[in-house]
Length: 206
Image 1 (cartoon, rainbow, N blue to C red):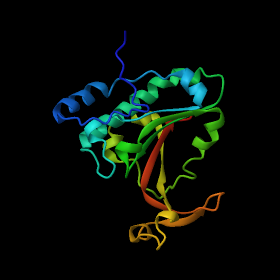
Image 2 (cartoon, rainbow, N blue to C red):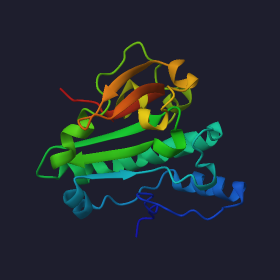
Image 3 (cartoon, rainbow, N blue to C red):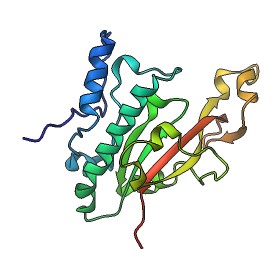
């Protein structure tokens, strides 16, 4: 049986993990392995994703070492390409992309796929790409197979709830690009750009 990496979809293992060298070797070994795409789950939920599975490097506010990031991106690329035959066999349109998130790399970077009722949400998730934004970082552009995808840059934005800040928006939010947004129920949010996300999809063949 072909070796595969265990899926990191919905992984909730919160045990403290030690042994950086051991886990680096695991990442090196698994960077070229891909989990199976569970078609039944995708068709039921209309979305699925594969996270990085960085364990002790799963930091929200710090970046993992560059070597760890490269191995993690290689895993997402391997997974994305391995899932293509299953996706192209679907009897319906689908969305498939790699998201490489700058400010929340370990937490939010993933391979994302969707169909059916979630298709438009995923296709329109980031709005229009920003041609003036930074290109895909050099450390990723050096990875084998990365050029099979077309990469576009989008602002990475978070929603800050006015309910949490009754005395006014915190200073850090006003120092970044921002705009106000109001939900259908009247709740007000400040949408703040904290960085960039690079979205990669298969290049179109004409």
